Amino acid sequence: MAKVLIVGSGAREHAIAVAFQRDTAVEEVFVSPGNDGIAQFFSCFKYEAKDKNEPFVEIVNFVKEKKIDYVFVGNEQALADGIADYLEAHGIDVIGPSQKAAQIESSKVFSKNLMKKYGVPTADYAVCEDYVAALRHIAGQSFPLVLKADGLAAGKGVIIAQDKQEAIAALDLIFLDKKFGNAGNQVIIESFLSGEEASIFAFSDGEHFVSTVFSQDHKALYDNDEGPNTGGMGAFAPVDKFFMLKDKVDKVIFEPIFQGLKNEGMPFKGVLYAGLMIDGEDINVVEFNCRLGDPEAEVILPIMTNSLAELCQAIIEKSIDQCELKFSGQYAVGVISASKGYPEAFERGKPIFIHKGIETLTGQIYFAGVKQQGENLFTNGGRVLCATALGSSLQEAIDKAYSMTECVQFSNQYYRKDIGQKGLKV
Ligand code: AMP
Ligand code: GLY
Image 1 (spheres, rainbow, N blue to C red):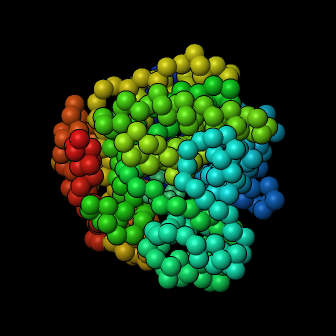
Image 2: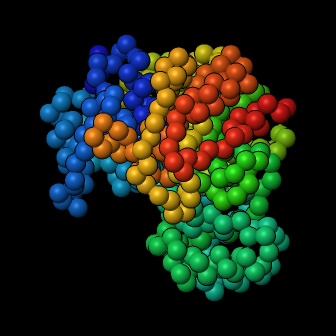
Image 3: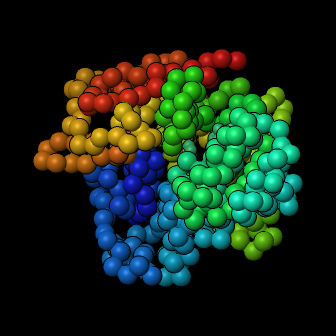
């Protein structure tokens, strides 16, 4: 029986915690730092790093004190900051890549160069290191054109310019206004890909991998994929229309990228997220992330019937090739309730009412931006929670997820009304 610590504080980490909790191979689940919603169900370990140079020393002490078997890292920032290297140097097993391998997400330049070197299909691109070089580069390009800050920018560092003027404005923002800070020291300028986006995940032990079903996030703020980009407004899985592409994705994307990381001396151990643009048979990688997706985790994990603990053990023992990922055959839909104003400025501190009727529904609320005061939970973030439900058809899962969402109320609540609809279209 394993004791597990999950690192992170969002709905994704709540979903990971629930997946471990329902696993008979797991004795106890801890989350650090978690949030006040997660803390209603799990022991959360919050701490202030005392030494900036050693930000994970408190985690090491906690893991040793509680005799935790391994740490599952949910969020990219901790991985980019080297949590896996630090914990492993202290003898602790970690599900999550090293700082070097996490560059696949933390540096778009690293990621694009790796894709190019190992023949993984992705949009043509150029790396520009300064304003003048970037201006010169866009002069000869056709539009739309995609400009990306190199570093982590919470999903906001990508600008799609429809014409030259918009591209120049984007460069002003990145290089002159430093809108993305140091994340914008280098810029990727790449060609625009058309098609439909989907994501797929691979559990890798550094030598072998197994991949999940496809999922679709809804990144735009408004229905019909309009409006500004967000961290994700909802997701569903599986995506029937892409089912036939799974073997191809394993072969042309996961195999060469994992091999490439291994060749470069940074084998990837953990969960790799491939964000894809699919246009008929044409598949291109838009981005890799070094962890499970949010909100994709909230729909993939509930339909995965494997023991998550067994998968983690197999990653630790480098025997993931002995595992086969299994899914229940159900559909899962997750609808994010956000604070109105997100992804820009929004108000916090609104009381969250969850109607008693929710108890008669089947599904799960995963908490993200919430805070407890007295007996009540209050909003405390842009994305507040995710209501996930399962169904034997996608339509049933959509209906149930919205019934759950309607049982949750807070002032300024905003959610998209069309999560999952694109999966109904063939
Ligand atoms: P990223 O942070 O790289 O995932 O980009 C954020 C979003 O921008 C993606 O989910 C896509 O919707 C869009 N995007 C990024 N790169 C491209 C591209 N080359 N062509 C079209 N859309 C893109
Ligand atoms: N669903 C987008 C992400 O996890 O980055």
